[in-house]
Length: 62
Image 1: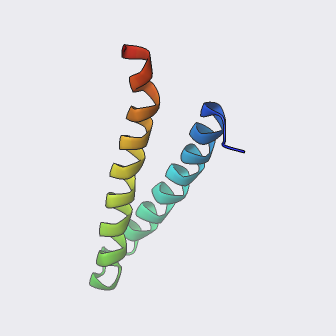
Image 2 (image 1 turned 90 degrees about the horizontal axis):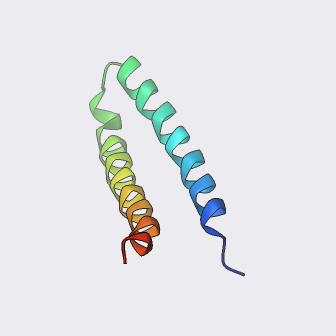
Protein backbone atom coordinates (compact mmCIF):
# COMPACT_ATOMS: atom_id res chain seq x y z
CA UNK A 1 0.00 0.00 0.00
CA UNK A 2 1.44 3.41 -0.95
CA UNK A 3 2.39 5.82 1.81
CA UNK A 4 0.21 8.83 2.48
CA UNK A 5 1.59 12.29 1.76
CA UNK A 6 2.16 12.96 5.47
CA UNK A 7 4.02 9.64 5.87
CA UNK A 8 6.21 10.41 2.85
CA UNK A 9 6.98 13.88 4.20
CA UNK A 10 7.81 12.37 7.60
CA UNK A 11 10.26 9.91 6.06
CA UNK A 12 11.86 12.69 4.02
CA UNK A 13 12.24 14.81 7.17
CA UNK A 14 14.04 11.92 8.86
CA UNK A 15 16.35 11.53 5.89
CA UNK A 16 17.07 15.28 5.83
CA UNK A 17 17.99 15.11 9.54
CA UNK A 18 20.41 12.24 8.85
CA UNK A 19 21.99 14.12 5.95
CA UNK A 20 22.25 17.25 8.07
CA UNK A 21 24.11 15.34 10.79
CA UNK A 22 26.44 13.77 8.22
CA UNK A 23 27.15 17.24 6.79
CA UNK A 24 27.88 18.60 10.28
CA UNK A 25 30.36 15.80 10.89
CA UNK A 26 31.92 16.40 7.47
CA UNK A 27 32.44 20.09 8.25
CA UNK A 28 33.75 19.42 11.76
CA UNK A 29 36.13 16.82 10.33
CA UNK A 30 37.92 19.44 8.26
CA UNK A 31 36.24 18.59 4.93
CA UNK A 32 38.68 15.78 4.21
CA UNK A 33 38.95 14.71 0.58
CA UNK A 34 37.97 11.17 1.54
CA UNK A 35 34.48 12.37 2.42
CA UNK A 36 34.11 14.63 -0.61
CA UNK A 37 32.32 12.04 -2.77
CA UNK A 38 29.96 11.27 0.11
CA UNK A 39 29.26 14.99 0.41
CA UNK A 40 28.42 15.16 -3.29
CA UNK A 41 26.01 12.25 -2.92
CA UNK A 42 24.33 13.96 0.03
CA UNK A 43 23.90 17.16 -1.98
CA UNK A 44 22.43 15.18 -4.87
CA UNK A 45 20.03 13.39 -2.53
CA UNK A 46 18.91 16.70 -1.01
CA UNK A 47 18.10 17.93 -4.52
CA UNK A 48 16.07 14.78 -5.14
CA UNK A 49 14.21 15.31 -1.86
CA UNK A 50 13.44 18.92 -2.81
CA UNK A 51 12.09 17.73 -6.17
CA UNK A 52 9.93 15.11 -4.47
CA UNK A 53 8.55 17.63 -1.98
CA UNK A 54 7.80 20.01 -4.85
CA UNK A 55 5.92 17.25 -6.68
CA UNK A 56 3.86 16.59 -3.55
CA UNK A 57 2.72 20.21 -3.48
CA UNK A 58 2.27 20.72 -7.24
CA UNK A 59 -1.16 19.08 -7.21
CA UNK A 60 -2.47 21.99 -5.13
CA UNK A 61 -1.64 24.48 -7.89
CA UNK A 62 -3.94 22.93 -10.50
